[in-house]
Amino acid sequence: MTDTPTRDALLYPFPEPPKAGEVREVAPGILWTRIALPFQLNHVNIFILDDGDGWAVLDTGIANEATRAAWDALAKGPLAGRRMTRLIVTHFHPDHIGLAGWLCERFDMPMLTTQTSYLGCLNISLSPGALDAKVYRDFYLEHGLDPATTDRVATNGHGYLRMVAPLPPTFTRIVAGDDIRIGGRRWRVMTGDGHAPEQAMLWNPEEKILLAADQVLAKISPNVSVWAVDPDGDPLGLYIRSLHGFKNLPEDTLVLPGHQLPFYGLHERSSELVAHHESRCAAIAETCAKKPCAASEFVPVIFHRALDPHQMSFAFTEVLAHVNYMLRTDRLKWAEPENGVRRVLAA
Image (cartoon, rainbow, N blue to C red; front, side):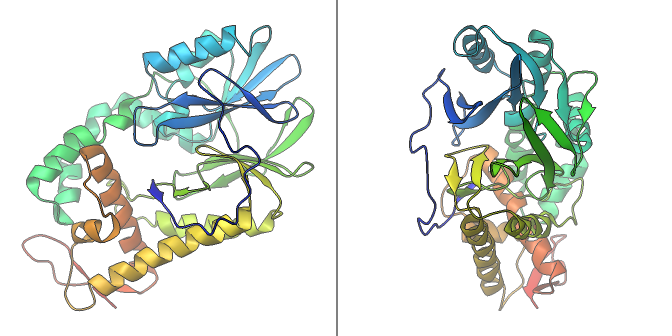
């Protein structure tokens, strides 16, 4: 995830997040808490919804002892006295689904998520070593990463994807267009792509509240990456399409995101994110206007800081998302490969 320019047009009704172990009510019957993450993005937002005789939970945090302890403290503290009714998982990234299996067993509740999220996470959970396979190493090499960096990324850069406890053996599928009744509210399921396939969001039209997961965040752009299993995919095109779709919701929607602060200004922020990615495309086009470039050569053009293996794996695949998007929109074209490395030119 990367910082993006903002014109400070957003309104933040809760300018300070809840402290560790605390909850804050952001609307009647909707509680907000945070779970710590051991990354540069050091938290994930968890929303807990009044569900009649108990609490419905949105997302989980990663699978580690600190997260388990945080949930035990919440259950014994601000959530005490009421059961957990169900877990709703927005997408298959470990900071959102990582502790799902443990939570569902610990609190005897079912898990609701999209089919893509369940199967995507299940694939990673059952085959954690697959990301080190030759086909994935070749993916990095053919787009210009040197062998030493490829080795670091392949062995260390994907460690984040393994921070997942065994999933519940069954789940309840949710699909775009479904209505879910949680307590006294009706929530419409929306899905978006780009950051994660079939990422679920919940929209309450009566009170104009959007549980947005990672699809739109206040200060940063969610990671939008091409992965080796779908090397010619266009996640950025799908993401931009999703951002344009937010124009169908009211501008005064209260956005409750998966990270950072809740905010008002959905249309403004969506437009900023589109402009951010278009500016990256312009920088890529300028870089390869006179000579062919491999995707790896665009990493320092887009990311102006040193990157550890975890960050490099996301940075490289996000750069490739821009390359694929520009190929799809005829702003780049393939050049002749050189020494087995694929290169592009401005069209």
